[in-house]
Image (cartoon, rainbow, N blue to C red; front, side, top):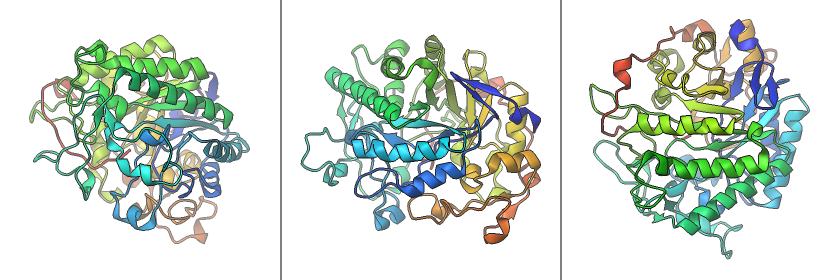
Length: 439
């Protein structure tokens, strides 16, 4: 595991190890204010280590950007919400989180998100939005709704048909860019070390990148360059506020399986006829900014649904290694890594750092456990989204393992040999495939 415990550069910061807390939606914001709570501060502080990078859950830049995740029955019943960073109260509450992380010597970046057509109009009924003149969702690159199909199905088992989005006007685009900038200013005021732009997983920026949704005929649609324009304009606006060395970007590159003609992953029904070409154009274009990092999601992330000791997705090959030579800065990998394959991926030079989601969620002291080979707490899926301290701040450290009933498993039970996709598996063709991954 030595490859994971050397220093790495993240823009202006020097990470003391290469294990990153991946951004994960937890749906535990204050219901009245959509602000993080004291429990949120505890959660991130528990996972902070000297010089270790934490990336927050998706934090929404405006009411228009914010989904109410009542598509999940548990969330609907509990009334839990995701956080924002557009109000002063939200900004002040995030300061409590960053202060707690910094007290332990950690680094924390705020992931900024606009969900585009995924957000639905019901956010307008929330008390902090109702009666204001805030634009409401959904909005997208084009007026292309999320639809059920034989291949994709009803996205995430929504009970209702998604409301068709309005196509963003050029004035809307400039307004949304301004919303991103204000969110970045708020992140600075809240004490974040940097921000990560969520440009992946079928949300607004991905909707502009992918021609399955982007049907525009103006300067934001059609060609690869035009479809990347919105991404680059948002990044430039964020860099103007933060400085390039405090900005990261997340992308979710896909390929098309030559055997089936289907995408290796689909997020919220967003499809693309040329996924490799558009991601190549986006990644090459990001080099101009000299960012703190680029985070890439491996497509296998959508298959992580089995019990951990039976999870076959851990053996799926890396598919984003082709972008290593294209991107000139620090590269973070996420999605389906075990401690062993993470160490191998860094040692092989495929990624500079590895972001862990489920395993960091369940193991607040994950870097220590990986370094010493200690068994891991097994994550509990039914507490991922919404709720209270259970499955949030009650996972024990290794030292306190006897004070908890959470089951353990040895790291060697997750052992999988690092594999990379063959060149023939990276050929682009057409077709969608369903997934069940939200963030």
